[in-house]
Length: 150
Image 1 (cartoon, rainbow, N blue to C red):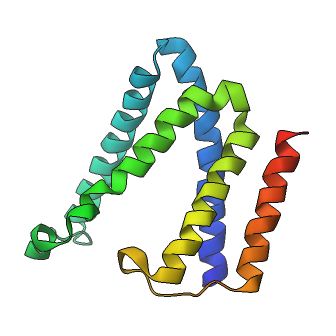
Image 2: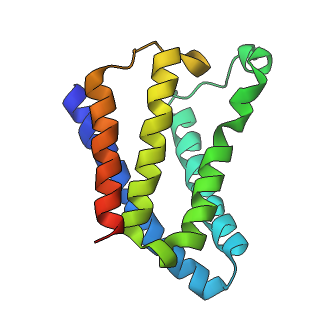
């Protein structure tokens, strides 16, 4: 099952790469990074609402429990990272190109993800840093440098 999950996330990563190019074109059409990012979010929200409505009708998406209102304050910040990513990707896509932009984003994701796993931040299960994980981070850093300096 893990391999299926890896395949699905690889496909999501591929979609994110396409999103970089699509949103860069949206920027050129709207002439505004703020308009482009908000149009992208509006489409995301619309799709999310439609999928939620269908799932609710099928009985597979019950309403959230009251625990939602007692959860830590920081759960409401989940979209901040995505909004920052999309806005910066729109602004920087033409300057960096899709490959370098994606590589830098993945490097940032992996670096912080290793810390989140190691310390169990945000309620994640602890997975301690290891030499193999640090080597993976170092190799990804080298990969970013190779893409940067062609």
